[in-house]
Length: 452
Ligand SMILES: C[S@@+](CC[C@H](N)C(=O)[O-])C[C@H]1O[C@@H](n2cnc3c(N)ncnc32)[C@H](O)[C@@H]1O
Image (cartoon, rainbow, N blue to C red; front, top):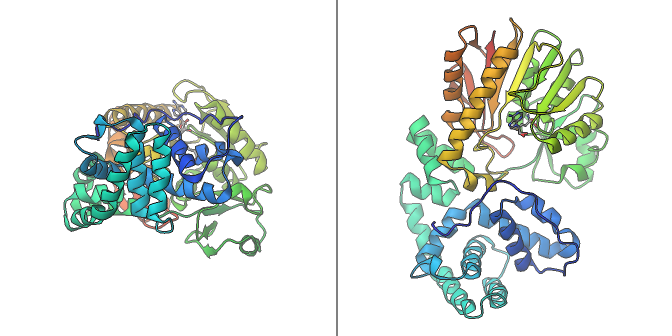
């Protein structure tokens, strides 16, 4: 994996304004280039605008997601077939082989010969001699790749399962250390599953919203949560009927449970210390018409999106969103309850955001856990005496969850962990819970609650 492009911090893709139309494979390569530079597939796809026709867009998205979801597997195949070593070849050859391995293995609807010839054409424009190498290597992938995949399936080491499921092997090892081999295998396998859109219904959603969604072409199912609704597939939420009216919010069922726990407190003021775009902020304000909410976030863009979200949900009169670090801002009034929905590795949501898993390293995990610890300590010191703190992450790693909690509890003897307000399922972690991505509508989440 030595030749992997550096997947640095997320940057927004730059849409070229004066650009020629693109075919599917070319667009897929553009998406991959953006991801390699720190972008994310969905946003880069949007930035392509009308430069690709709808069928080419579908092909480009399928190829790019196939590549990013199981990147380490394609790198493994590239290592095996692009000899003597991938680094000996140009970047274009390396990228074409990677994309080809993903496409030939996963895309059943696209004829292998057509994919190979598109990748050869793409490479030819960048590296004339390299195009022959791409041709030869992809034909080997086509012939010998299935046997290699079968060999991995027959091998019961966790490392092979990680390759097949698209999980960085060091994370698989961490899960084994944290939870034992059986749970670790389950987490790895769950990562290979698909995900679908789940909605949180607003109190003013019309009763016939499910029918309206079905009329718009969605397959709708009931959720295990009274305020939830499941769609059979993913969809662009803003394109669904009722989005503009604020009748629903896209939110995974695990995330809904976190908001439910945070809204269950005595008092009238809640501080949401890492409010992001305000998904849980809006949920809590809807659940508790008697309270006011203050939401903070470091990101100006997310706070601006949060402000728009409160307007969409008609909550702006009770929710204030502010930009700044939760380690420095002072609350407008002392909070009775605080939600720390901490920035994290996102290891419970990798099915939705596959780019994140390849950006995580043991080093930046350590930086995250430091920040999480300080955020939780700040919440412990800011909350009123008698108040409640909820800590959550969308991570399945103990380092970001119970280990942060243990360390912060040691520093605050006046804080104690309390039972959650309901049985949320998942795996017990002290008095908290780890919710697992066991179906397409749930993400991996950790939540724990505290009293001062
Ligand atoms: C998990 S997300 C929050 C999601 C949000 N609660 C929701 O439900 O939509 C974590 C957020 O923490 C923010 N963040 C990171 N460092 C922060 C800090 N020092 N102070 C405040 N927010 C921070 C990030 O910008 C990110 O939006």
